[in-house]
Image (cartoon, rainbow over all chains, first blue to last red; front, side, top):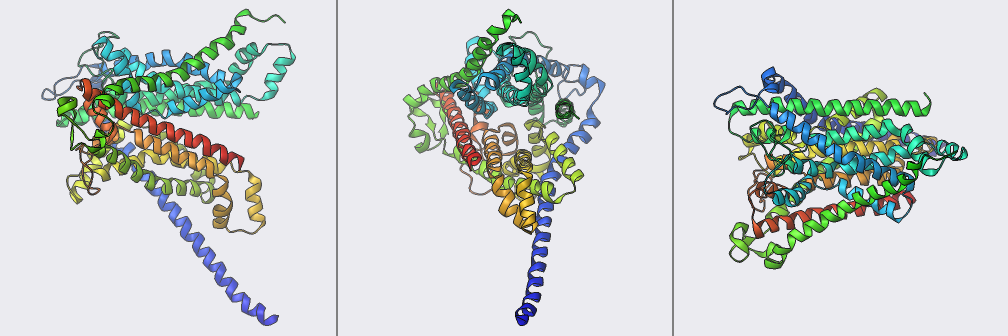
Length: 295
Length: 288
């Protein structure tokens, strides 16, 4: 008995040391993984900020593009174009997305609601280039020319599922008590969702809209053969239109250094807009979450 | 209390919108199929895998329609990126959840959330200007399968890390307290309690990341060289299905365009399979 105890003690401490060692190695591996994950991301951001700032100027955001041999010039038309194309996508996408989200959350406990949710998830996974070829085939081929509106339709296809899913989740965060209190006052189901649940969840619905906007503002592939590109100010919704992401692509693959520099400046403008939208959205979400917990 | 009259019609309005957005997906699939039919009828599915090369502009009879190099490109680049990003993403999520001090974990999450929003064309530009020259110094030509795998890894890592972290965070505290009460080491807690409990969330993370990797266009278009060939090594330039559409759709006519819609339909099918797998396994995970 006592022999077993004295024999067991060193073995146990050996095992304990092994366990400490193993834990240490695992922490090390996790730190390495973290570093691998963070370094390239920060590197990308650093490159955009450092090189972009160097070439960003007032001229860049206020004037039209110049040929690479001339120098100077800017992307003002692309900045306006992006605003219009994204804005129209939102005009089309917000009612459909929010409405779908309300349906899935409030009336969706049936076969239609569940299949809509499944289809929304499929649509959320839709490769953006596929949204592009659909808008190309349906609108560009029919109209016979590239247009801002076809770009907006392609972006709306990517926008709707994100808004629908975030709206559904935002409405489901509103507690059952609030709905039941409303029913107890004799308010109908429809008025409850419209006048009680939706206003209470409005902050988070807006967050979803902002996140979806940030996502489509950076989309390039669906615009390559829909909105296409242009060197001039926007001439109409039915005309080819320059956008920031497509400009970044076409300037980036050009052989001219001046254009590369402008692409960095454009990337900085785009990344700042997208990050600003994301930060605003997350802050709004955090504030609402705190409010709803009663803090 | 009298009901505002408009409110009752709300149910019908939102039901109509829900049907509309569900209908859009079905219309997309129908449209892709409709556009793909000429190529499927005139060329036939078999020739997409047995023809000698990819020369689709010469018409259905004289042209060649071999999609194997593009399919191989998409599968190798997506598989490579998912294989690297999954362990890295899960490990960094574990570190944030179980090892890092709270503030560091939160800071990491904020940072990754922000960086997840950087547009893919910016990653592609960085890859083109910074990453491919580095690979070229080592093993020319630089624009290669390896560059694509690395850039996609960077892009899908935030997805894996964030979703894994949030599913690890949603483990009931009682499970972890139980593990502590049993005297389990941190590693035993992670392996025996945390990972199994968070399994379905982590699975979702990997599925979503895979979908993103398969569907990504701009970044791979800019760093992979886009030569139509089955890659012999990771340093070979390759072309993916998505890059092929981006490069050729602008000028493709007739059966060539139709063949590109066939590839669009293939991408769509991959997404449907991934979403369905996730829906099924996610449900099982919740029941377990």
